[in-house]
Amino acid sequence: AVAADAWSGAGCGLLAGVVTHPRARGRGLGAAVSRFVVDDLVRRYGRAALLVDADNTPAIRAYERAGMRGRLFAAATAVPR
Image 1: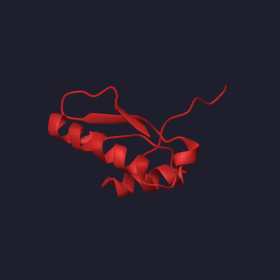
Image 2: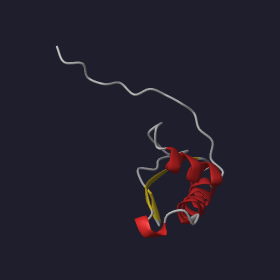
Image 3: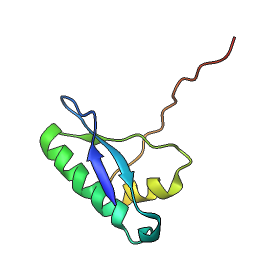
Image 4: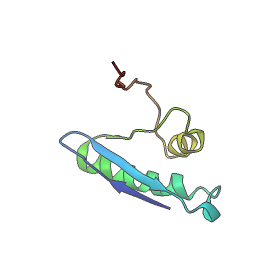
């Protein structure tokens, strides 16, 4: 499993690139690596955030196990004319 600090800026670290090899899933590795990176981001930036699709239940569960909580928001989409 891997995770990265991506596009962090003043006041907020951004967690991204979280992935676990398919054969290693279900062992808590995604949550562990997310927790490790989030702890570092909070130390360096004061807070941390990430973006995840609302229907990505396995990822949301891993982030919750890593101590994060969700806030729903909507993204704009282009509508063809």
